[in-house]
Amino acid sequence: MARTFCIANQKGGVGKTTTTVNLAAALAKVGQRVLMIDLDPQGNATMGSGVDKRELRQSVYDVLLESASVAQVRVVSATCGYHVLGANRDLSGAEVELVDQPRREQRLKEALAPVQDEYDFVLIDCPPSLSLLTLNGLCCAHGVIVPMQCEYFALEGLTDLVNTIRQVRANLNADLQVIGLLRIMFDPRITLQQQVSEQLKGHFGDKVFDTVIPRNVRLAEAPSYGLPGVVFDPAAKGSQAFVAFAREMVGRMGSM
Image (cartoon, rainbow, N blue to C red):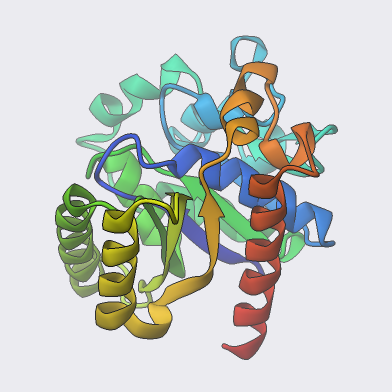
């Protein structure tokens, strides 16, 4: 059965989508069966997986509205090696349409149940807010991977996210937990980043992943080519770091 993880942080611009698509590609590269779900109406994770959101005949919107199944909507990203449940602007209307519907927070969980055995990992790219879309992701996840930059404002956002996870666990998904914190866009030459990194390790201990994703130009360039950095330039330091992170994730799941 697949292990399902939300990549979430209530602070915007911290590398959630970069983490999602590169981890998906890296997991596929090390032999894992992966489904990537884009829950952000901007559709950046869809485009970054080599799938044109403008050409999607159906999207995760149709899955949430129960007009199509995951098996009908998912597409294969041939260049990246994983399946994509894509998103486009249609998804922005889903929250309004779902607001008075029954089981509104459980739609994605129920839709994923029939395909759970087809994957090793399901990765969900969440929008940077506690919306009904994010709740759907959190309700079906085993845990949350939190990408964060090592700066002080990021620590404030982390506190908000931990409180949100605590509320969801108490009311909607008792299995939800923080799997780990991923230090991303890290520059060891900046003293402040080193200090925040040490604070994270001191406070969260083994919840901080060993792998660190360095600040890397090739990772930043890759989305303009519609590819994860891991596929765009496998030799880049950032790409190699994501492959190392994928191996760490596989190892952690094996020990759980």
